[in-house]
Image (tube, rainbow, N blue to C red; front, side, top):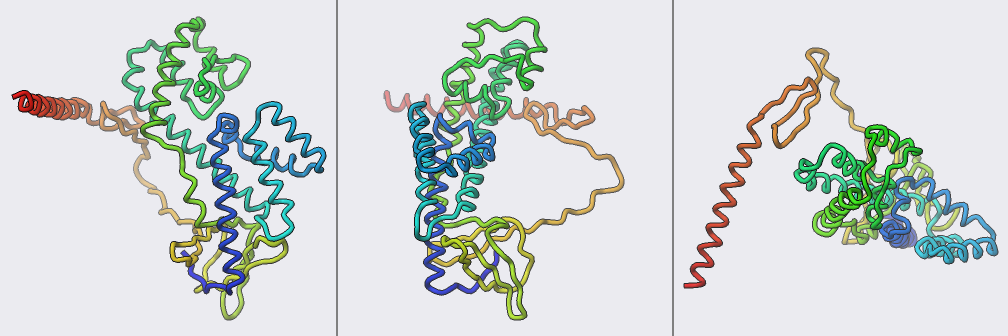
Length: 341
């Protein structure tokens, strides 16, 4: 965290407006990435960003035609997003620059992507016991549905029955693994089990990110600031909401500025600067053998040398779990008996 001398009233008001505008746009991005229409775009935010930039660069007549085509195709979320970004672009006074809304797009898309990855990881954990009762091919299909934030995962969420396509390179290995395709009834049954688990995880365990956390900060990448040092102090010139004008901050102390910066506004209205500094790792050991370790439940850990450690761990945990379950049932039974009496 780097401290700095607070700028004048004019620049301070500009920083407040930038934080609010950045937070509003970021919240909008995060909201549309939650919709069924645009949630698939989180897999490649750069392609989605380029599509938005191409639409915004069109002349007014072509841009309006583009919006009309999207409305015809039921793309309401993309229409609202393009309308907002177009208004920002054509605002004559101070407004959020394109670099900043692109940073907000990148950040929120990564947040949404992390959310879906967390949903998949938790769904796999909850399905682990159920999958043991499946045969190899059924289990393989269930794992294929949850192998990542891919086409089949979002088709599953939409209520459809994903089918591996041998023409797609990602599905080819799955299709070559089995000569006999699963029946439609089996596919529907397995997909239903996985979908219900995913929906339960989304409802009870892994919630979608909240949007209120954006309104107290703003990001600056390397194109949005200039680091300049003088004999007296280190100065940081930040992009403002007015093209061609920069806000100069007089930093306290000196250190190297690099990467994306984050300007944080606390509840008292005071700002601080978050600078990410690379951390030097300790040198690796030159002696001994490097191994990988995988922590588990049925065994405490498994090494990359195929050695299982703590093989009786599951029995120990199961005994504790059974004892707690019996004690809980006994307490409930006592409570019911007391009420009946």
